[in-house]
Length: 295
Ligand SMILES: C[S@@+](CC[C@H](N)C(=O)[O-])C[C@H]1O[C@@H](n2cnc3c(N)ncnc32)[C@H](O)[C@@H]1O
Image (tube, rainbow, N blue to C red; front, side):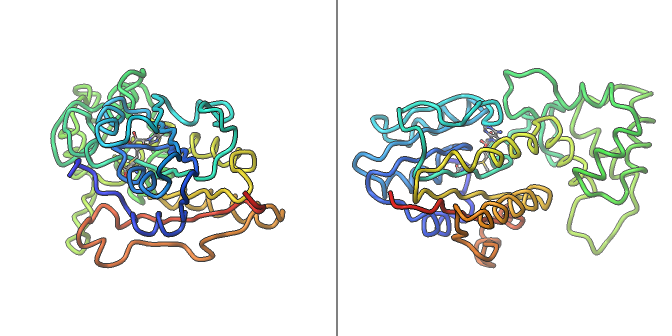
């Protein structure tokens, strides 16, 4: 057990259908949960280029992946100009983007993603970069905060939450996840029927903003056409309707243009069994596209 259960693991392997000798670009390697399964199928000489912006994730992945078939890159895939980096491949047979955060990132309170465990209000997937959530909350205007929470968190109480945050920071800067969560919970009416913690959506919105998650996804989607080898497959797992809408629209355009085909005509969601075993998988949605042509 490496601390992160790969979401839709069997569906990813089945949908991407990796074959011996195929090369994989995993843009969100994490601890390598999906990659290890795929490398098993691409043995003996299929290679992996694994990208992650979290150095800690890469260090853990290196422990479980076959050293002679992999190359790891630390960075945001949204910053890689043409995503065709390295191992001399040019284009890829298999590309995977399993977006969002990993369980270790959420569970380690020092990373500052979690409203369940108190920690410094950080939320950077890449701790070597500037700009924590605490710093953002110090300088953002109330109006910008309303927009951020309503657009990226889709929280209908955005205005109340933003007002409460601005009042709280006037007393003392908000530097801990625990304090932020308390401020949010006190600002919204208690809904006994909701299983969702009142802080969930605001934390999600801040995380997406701090890490430029939608911008990175757009960067990838703008390059799908030049990324895949003929016959190559790309799987994207998203955890948010804003992300999934972007993926769906891009995949639709690519198939209409005639060079690609949908491998998953219907959205792939985790089974009830998977959600029971791994509740964090519940919002996952996967789409796979294939570039037409023979390998
Ligand atoms: C859901 S986890 C991936 C888990 C992985 N598929 C596994 O099974 O172990 C997402 C990972 O992607 C990384 N990540 C998210 N956005 C990224 C980006 N724009 N560039 C590089 N890495 C990113 C995160 O740091 C995290 O480690």
